Structures are given as structure tokens and as C-alpha cells.
Image: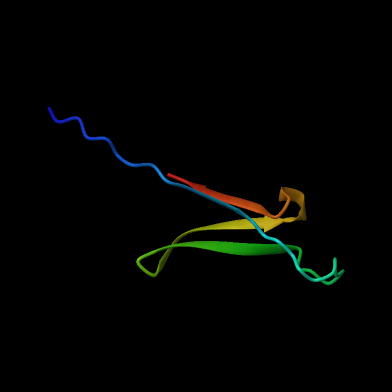
Length: 57
């Protein structure tokens, strides 16, 4: 038996708007997680989520 530790990764972020608190922001944004140039996961962020998103292994 071989005990191998698998690395875990967490990627989190917050969309920061620099638009003078404009009223024409989109309702949601989509954030893609890429691996070797390929989308492997997508998260949606909105005002309801505090514009936060995250990906966990």
C-alpha cells in the first residue's frame, strides 16, 4: 500500500467594481476556472453573493 497525499487547491475572489457605483452593472458575472487553457469549472457571482466566487478541490 502506498499512502499518497493529494494536494488540494482553493481559489477565491471578489469582483471589485471601479465604476463610481454605476447603476448599469450586470445582474451576474461568470468566472471561469481554467486548466491548461481549458475551462474546467464556472462560478456565478452577483450582488446577492457579495460578488464573491470560489473554487475548491
